[in-house]
Amino acid sequence: MSGLCPKRFAALTDRFRGLRVAVVGDFCLDRYLDIDPALVETSLETGLPVRNVVAVRPQPGGAGTVTANLVALGVGEIHLIGVSGDDGEGFELRRALGALPGVRMEHFVCASDRATFTYGKPMLLEPGRPPRELERLDRKERRPTPAALAGRLAQSVRELTPLVDAMIVLEQVDTADTGTVTDPVLAALAEAARERPALPMLADSRVGLDRFPPLSFKLNAGELARHLRLAGTPSLDGVRAAALELARRHRRPAFVTLAERGIVAADHRGRCEHLPALPVTGPIDVVGAGDSVTANLCAALAAGADLREAITLANAAASIVIHQLGTTGTADIPGLRQRCVGGVGAASR
Image 1 (spheres, one colour):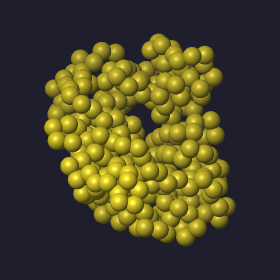
Image 2 (cartoon, one colour; image 1 turned 45 degrees about the vertical axis):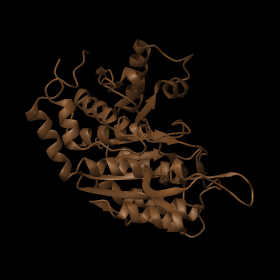
Image 3 (cartoon, helix red, strand yellow; image 1 turned 180 degrees about the vertical axis):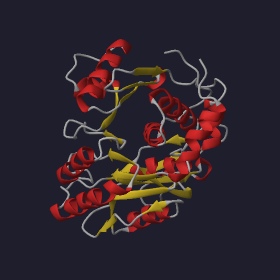
């Protein structure tokens, strides 16, 4: 079967520029440090090797990667609800986010008592080889989010709920209630879901979605099994059945990512779709692929796509991003068109 016909692809993606999307979550700084191995030295003081950094590439990560993918799709307005520290990393993050077209930062908080979530990524650039990431140097805020800050972020959710066409929630922290998505924010999201049951609201979390209200969930197979208390990792048929169960519970679409097996999508009306991943050619880098899926699923649903159309776009986006090496990649409309139109994204039901 074909992917998307040219007319339908254009109809959906042309609507992106009129969308207003809120991104609620943990915004990180991806600080890439490009290292030239030809410039290795030895420290006179310690005798240890010294790696020389020849370029520093700050990029938005976490919820910032979702944001960058929405920008690549041409989404008209992207409202950020999140926080950075009042530190050097926070300055880099806010500058990188603020430079993105369509991004609105009225609800993005700079907090003097918080540290900016930072991934330090040393990248070894060896001639004739793909960039190779060395041991990361991360900085994470492990203290609970202050009540006043949590309340301020929750109020931002309430203020934006009537103004947007879709909402994405991404929890990137390793410990619950240390980032943006605290209990007050979850309560505000639950209110939003009740007030606007037709509003696409897509949630993803590293620490699990058990605390979340009934939104559209995006999970991998292992996360799905844990969330529904299933024994072992489910088969493809088991994933279909579990996705349908989750969609019925929440009365919202559910999405399960399966790496090379693609994506399963289900809704509460009993519809279930599956598309395998597109073929892989050459080296890959999976960093950012899941966030590109999230951005494309949400934008597609807000533009009126059905389940199959949404996962067609999301699969294509992941295929583009994993072939971008040594960076947190994005997928744009021309790249999606190349993969979606004319059968490139074809698969059977």
